[in-house]
Length: 410
Image 1 (cartoon, one colour):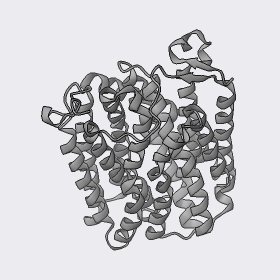
Image 2: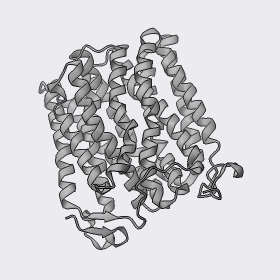
Image 3: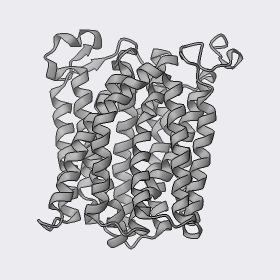
Image 4: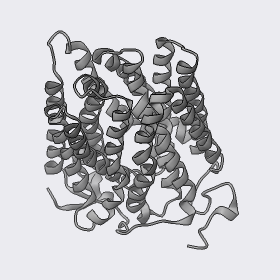
């Protein structure tokens, strides 16, 4: 069970015990708890917690704090293998999700959210590292697309159950959270016990790594975190607060996203492999800027619920292209830098996440449209940065400007 197996010998194992299968198992397990929690969250905090926009902002600041502290993974993997840490974190996510509805007060919601967030962010940090270590560069975009699709399948099933059975069976928040979180915890435990410990061909550096030649990756990661927070915190909240979406209605919107994602995620992975990371990210950021400007128009000009729903779906589709940022880093990175840089990148990604939700929660009370206009501006900054990516990024060719690449200095 815990016997190390070199990654280049894993092909001798049965198909169900190979690294790629484990990545798919984790991709299937995580969204069950996380997206079940997310689907009910806005209705839960408004109906039972009595949250307003400011309270919601503080909730997400608490939720994102463990992401800011993800750099701590570097210290933990000195003592615990990445694979074990990832699965233990997944168990924590599931367990915390299970008890969410038991604590409907402000303090209770924030405490349980903090625990589940530690599990989620530490899992995601390790998962990204394992993906880039275990997947070959030439196939990584395609496989990452399939992993996204796999996660969408399990989320689709979970959301489908909520939509179909919420009213007919009189489901409660507690019942759904217990089922979703429990299933994730069980799958993670099985993976922890059933799979050998895989060893990548290059040992990872177990200390913080900050390299000048990764500066563009760091900048894009920071902007992605800031921009994405606005979507996560306020887009669905808007659908409930402004347009009065019920649990089954907001979940139906999520279902539409998932059906589309199941189909297009593998195609997006293939497209990134064909177009290259630069074109994929330029397309994503251009589309996001337009979507966020139109989101602002919902408040500035009073546009209706149909446009809001369409924008929400398009927004979600565009975010799938973010896998190009992963493969960009995989191409420019030293192999031994992947684990520590994944942790550092998660912290960078969450710098804005710690203060933006709370700060923008107050702006939301004054002008929701201004929040989305700010997000559009962030997307434009990301677009300008993406234009600096070369057509074929590699070590020594991190940007389009030779003098801004720093391999010789390192």
